Length: 100
Image (cartoon, rainbow, N blue to C red; front, side):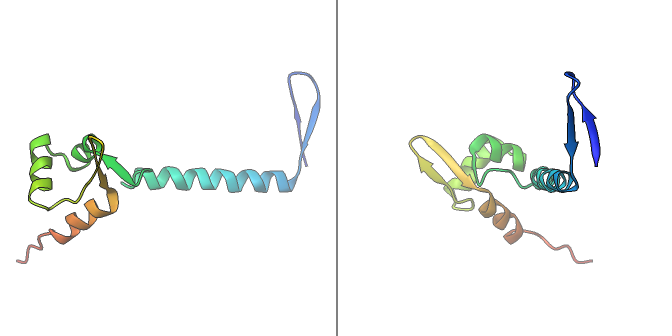
């Protein structure tokens, strides 16, 4: 058991179970952080600005990808949304394999 003192001089007792619960919560938070840093955004749907940043392209290039059907999108009101998974599929489908 671990004893902690607060500013009010009261003593709190931490049990092994408390530490185990804390460990599980911490691991889950780390897992979520790693997922977002491995290129997987927390959101399933991305707006145009996020897609342009992700792909490093201009607004005109993004518009061309929509017009020629390369990049699927959904329009709700006046806002365009792109599904992250579909963006990754387009990149994989268009991957060029250099063979020397």
